Length: 295
Image 1 (cartoon, rainbow, N blue to C red):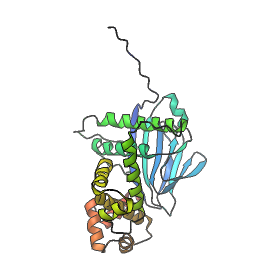
Image 2 (image 1 turned 180 degrees about the vertical axis):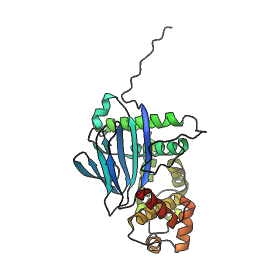
Image 3 (image 1 turned 120 degrees about the vertical axis):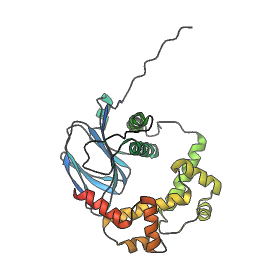
Image 4 (image 1 turned 90 degrees about the horizontal axis):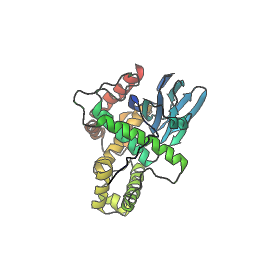
């Protein structure tokens, strides 16, 4: 038999990577602005942020992403009432399809957010530098880097951009078809996640979560392990600490008030949990974030 090869075309091909950041900003943070000859996008993971693109000003909200085209002056500023968590990635790409993203603000779905999360995870494995330094200009690779980390970042970044393109062309289209079982698991996960978000001031148990969301204990544990790599209550503990970090960055409440608002039995238990999850005490965390903002 004689076979003929098929040429696979690249719609979007990332050529170089400049920065990958995950920022946790204070509510009064301000970045004076810059322009550069490569692409950049800003995704709001939590909170909201004011962004300025040339002469355009807009408020970017949770799950929205804004693109800055090459040589476009851009700056950002926290709103004063919200301490935002942001993903900022800059890269060079000369593919014609990138013209779609000029001056675009798009909403990111669950798949897009998962892809960004995977990029951040791989970046932490690959680079020997902090991902939360807004003034970092060069990302140094670790001497012993994981096999395929660079390629996985490139593939997932291209997948993210292609997914946004496809979603814009057809709101009902999905970048990857999902099996029926996966849809059910996602619905349960999202339902329980929403319940957790609405009860951050409570001391939840697995039994209560199962009862309120009509799901079996073993099924719920399995879903959370698959989607987050954590147990249900462990993930809830991380959600509480993430909420605490946002409150700390607004400067509206002291540690005791934050502890009480999140349902902790005491400030001492809250501090132990905070250090267990973040590796820092609450005071060390606030000092670290403020130090970055003041550089």
